[in-house]
Length: 43
Image 1 (cartoon, rainbow, N blue to C red):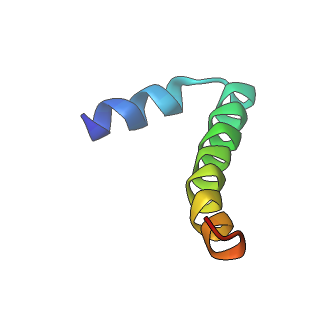
Image 2 (cartoon, rainbow, N blue to C red):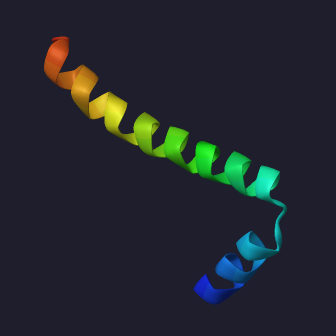
C-alpha cells in the first residue's frame, strides 16, 4: 500500500504535489492543536 501512495504522489504534477504536502501539514497541525488547547483552557 505504501509504495502505491509514493508512486501516485510522484506521478502528480509539481503543483499538485505542493497541494498534497500543504494538506498533510495542515492535518498534522490540526492533530496537535486539540492537545495544546486542552492544556490552555480548563474543561
